Amino acid sequence: MKSEPMPGKDENTANIVHLPLGERAYDIRIEEGLLARLGSHIAPLLKNKRIFIVTETTVASFYETKISASLQAAGIEQHWFRLPPGESTKSIRIFESLLNDILGTGIDRTDVILALGGGVIGDLAGFTAASILRGIRFIQVPTTLLSQVDSSVGGKTGINSPHGKNLIGAFHQPLAVFIDPSVLSTLPKRELQAGYAEVVKYGLINDPAFFNRLIENGPALLGIEASNQQMALQIKAIKTSCEAKARVVVVDEHETGQRALLNLGHTFGHALEAECGYGSTLLHGEGVAIGMVMALDLSARMGLATTQERDQLINHLKAVGMKWSAAEIAQDLDAETLLSHMSKDKKMEAGRIGFILGGIGKAAMHRDVDLDLVLAVLHDSVNGVQA
Image 1: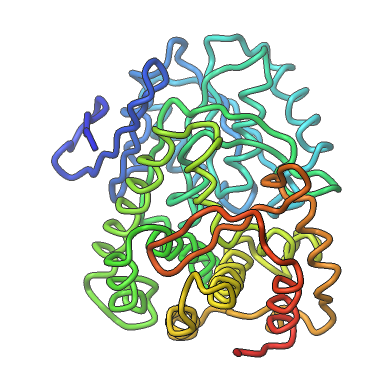
Image 2: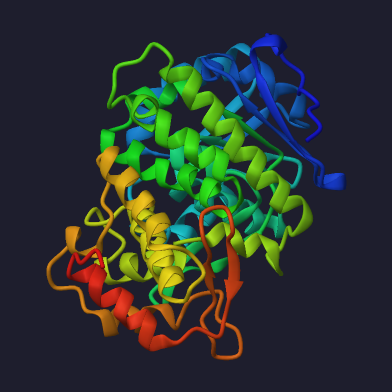
């Protein structure tokens, strides 16, 4: 994929992934220590020397001082909006409040919103940018592994509804994505593991060689095994993941076909999140990891994958300390209830649930799926059964 670096210093140390989307083309810049230099990279992108930063309180406590100094040094006026952490922030109530707070500053259509945080902040700030004044530009600065490899790339923005996850939103591409992998050192182990699920996803979809490298290097990448290569492994995994997503987004920006493959494990995972209440009981990436196991289990039962492939995924998740079954979340989950949540999935079409299925590296969309098989998979997962 073509790489065209943005203006800024230290080009030789940066990894650039380019998304050629015509007038909406943009770069993903991956560079250790980038936050301290953020102002110099952002300034050339601004028509007005001011920016509206949406973040959450925990992230602000780590990075506001550093970023504020960088922006100030670049002569950029700053407006900060600090929100509570957690998935519940992606709500209609907070979306409305944020809209009104930003409109109250006198923002205009030439201004830019900056999303500083994980997937929740990126989705909410992006949807706010898509909505305010009928759409203004925004920049993604993702601070979790999950958001760096997935949600900050591709222009999906949105909030949750009582009816399901991400059911309200818009496709709105960012102006740029700036990724500083050094921020991963501040993440709790659980958050880092949750993001790693999305990295594994790219290998399972269509890159078995990448999946095999993750089996070899995953423990070192996550810091489970001591290694002086951890940062290099993280940068390589982030870049490979972003390149994989970029290739899909360029050919199917609005998810009319191939882009749906990026939802491997998500149909199951979103059902688990809905049942667990979008709180700390289950992180999004944890739901995706368990959902991917269910997808491979269903694939094996349908003859689309082998049980060995399913078990290879389970064993890898166990090796890096991650959950693999719904029984590890809670003891009172019900297979029928989870299936009812799945019936509200965004990929529903003509009353049929869309499932991303297949063996390792061979994902494809399937709609004519026997729901009795799905129930059997759900039942085994909520009971911790590895068939």
